[in-house]
Image (tube, rainbow, N blue to C red):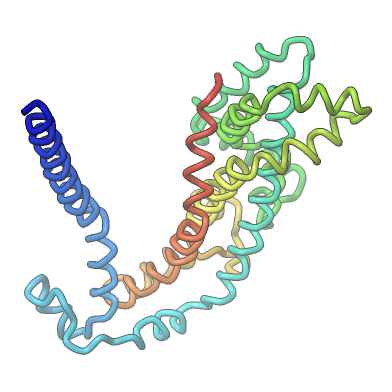
Length: 290
């Protein structure tokens, strides 16, 4: 009798769990559709003909997808020139940010030096300063050294921690999660801090480094304000500026505008798709220790 009651209770709990899981999946699918819908709208708009655009929301799905709109959008502006400029800036900014964030984070997490915690607080305080506050003195400084109109104002600060306070904090949190026994045993074996950083900390910090690289890539790729202020030569424009120029000239042709926007957005989607597992691990482990 007792066995029968236990079996009935077990089936009842199992049924409730199944119903809860089904409801949860339905809610998640509905929420995911809300986030995916803008991208689908962009894609379907990019594939429409001008006649279908005039019908507005009455035609959501294009009857004959115009894949040539993507090629046409690339031909209306020097797309590959802007793509090359964006890649130059983004790659160097990612390298510089990863370098400055990891080295500074190691110093804050594993080295003992006077005023370390106070300077760490000062570094975190810089996150509250909007870029508009330092824009004028920064512009004057770059003009004084002759960097205006070049890519240097966009690239060089990344190698010195410019705008990387959040990434330093993120990487430091990960370094704090590395057992100190590893570094202490390496010191006993005769390793210096540079060797510990290169051979122990960096290999163990792949998730954190991937997270920093992905965030930096997205920020530099979509950056519009920096190139707008410091790049005066159209030959140095990035895709963000190119898209704005495209909007100014062909803003009324929404199919071409959406096609150009999707082309610019694709690299970040592809990068996140391949790095999402490591990215999620980095977000999860950077909050283990404070």
